[in-house]
Each structure stands twice: as structure tokens, then as C-alpha cells.
Image (cartoon, rainbow, N blue to C red):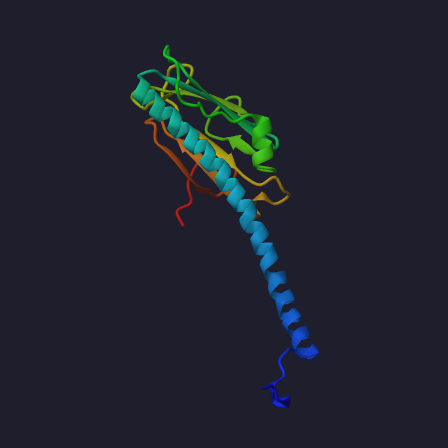
Length: 186
């Protein structure tokens, strides 16, 4: 059945060439994968906050009671607390993010509050049953929270932001810098 011309396999040279080509492809791909993973972590952290703020807005509208949101950022961590101001028992799990949980889930991904908040490391606002956003002073307010990589060159990985407008609109988008409140429309 098998004659001399029916030999199968690779020569040593073919195997070395295949390994060299694979090494070149990996050398090019690994930094890109690493960059992609950091960007995905930044966007996931922002998406989690956006989702929790939208939960608070929906709960306020459904229950007819305001919901307070307190966001703390700075350093390598971030945290937020959502507190419904309702008399009734809440049958749902209220989304929260402790600094410890955040640091474990989103390593080296700090967040910063940028939009006219004093002090700049914390912001608190309430979402009313009409969906409007108010500061503790009773004035309509807005907030922007920027997420980035904790590195020497965070711009390499980009910045991702969650914006909350006074009208209750919540969006998540790329932004040009850690201090920008403008979305990049690319």
C-alpha cells in the first residue's frame, strides 16, 4: 500500500520556518491583544456604572420615590452607592460597587469625577420620579465620570466616560482626555 513516494511528515527546515512565522505573528499580536484587554476593562467599568445609574433612574420612575447615587473616585479605585428613598421593601437587589470589589474586578482602572463637582473626588445626586437629576442643593445638575488605565501613558489606552445630564440622560462614550466632558464622535 505505501510505497517510497508516499512518505508523510515535515522536514526539520519546514518545521523551523513554521515556528519562525508563528513567532513573528505572536510578536505582532500580543501587544495588540494586551491593549485590547485594557480598553475592554475600561469600557466594562464605565458600562457597569452606566447600567447601575440607569437602574436607579428606572427604579425612581417605577416606585415614585427619588434614588440617591453617590460616586467616589480617585487613586486606583472607584465606588458607588445607590440608595432608594422608598418606604416600601425593595424586592430587587440594589446595585452597589464597593472600592474593594471594584479594585478586584477592574484592576488598575481608576475613575475620576470631572464635571464641576466639589470636591472632585466624590459626587452625589438624586434621580427623581420624573427622571431628572438633582444635586443635594436642590438644583438640577449633571456629572461626568471618566475611566482610564492606571499607567504612565493612560492616553495610549484611551479614556471612557459616563455622562449624566440634568434631564436624566445617561450615556457612555470615548473622550479625548481625563478632564474632557465631550464625547469623541469617531
